[in-house]
Length: 162
Image 1: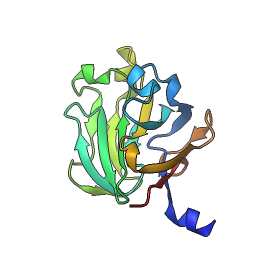
Image 2: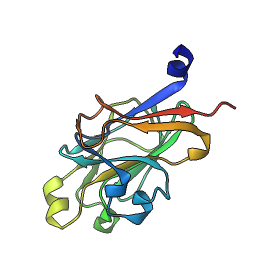
Image 3: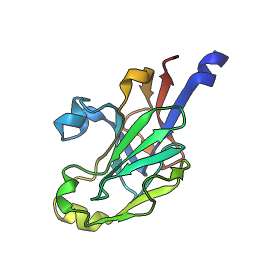
Image 4: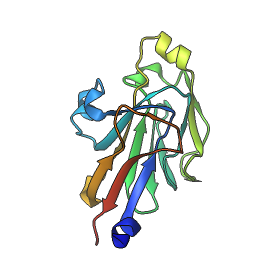
């Protein structure tokens, strides 16, 4: 049991809200786990934070999504909203820079909830592990429960041994 705990990792909530299954995301790529496996958050907060320690490998020009490479080699993506790329960056404020090391809880993007939702976009935020080939095991926190950003773990996983 101790060895399992030593080799297991967790991702914490990137935003305050309600954790839901990816199947509830109104986008086939996420709902069918085509891009990766994870969970989604129906956000109540407006600041998206790093869910773990790692390198901020990409922030999309439109600031609606970012990717990280974690210290253990896992690659994750946090995608803020559905079809929000169509806003061309309006309603999103970048708080961190691509290529920098971040710690769990560091603010990455701030959203203008009223602006985005007022234009009819959902802010449901999928967080997925994209390089599943290195993942041995993945489990989620209790779905449909409320979570606090950087406080509550939402994904637990193990890495395959090399």
